[in-house]
Length: 153
Image 1 (cartoon, helix red, strand yellow):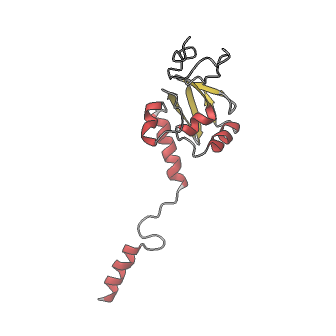
Image 2 (image 1 turned 45 degrees about the vertical axis):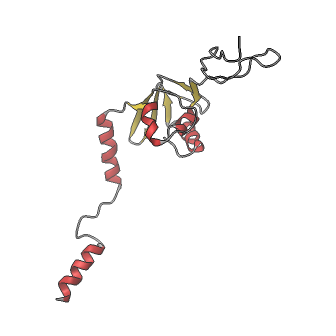
Image 3 (image 1 turned 90 degrees about the vertical axis):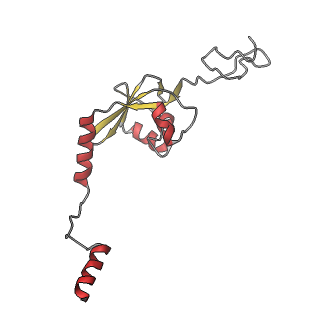
């Protein structure tokens, strides 16, 4: 086998497959990746440590199974992430070689969460936040200026 023939484990780059002594090099398979690194690479978590902590708290599942941070994902796997009160889910379309920009994420994963679940999540988010209706609480800068114009005449 020549140094350019790297199809032994699915790696299609020009990396030599034999060392000088004739032993196999440890060529990584680019079709699999650790789940904690994958979640960080596709920007579901800001840091890899946050992804690892979420996995340890059993907030991440692969194919409906609770996993460890060292579990490997591959193309076609389904990832579920707990975002209370729902489980958001994605299908893996491709494995990145490293962290990617936000614009490239849709090429790597496809969200499969139902519309009803996303609506439920949005309603829960709105219920948690405090909304000030106009006229309640401290006036805005615009309201204050309107009141000053009204009272100065």
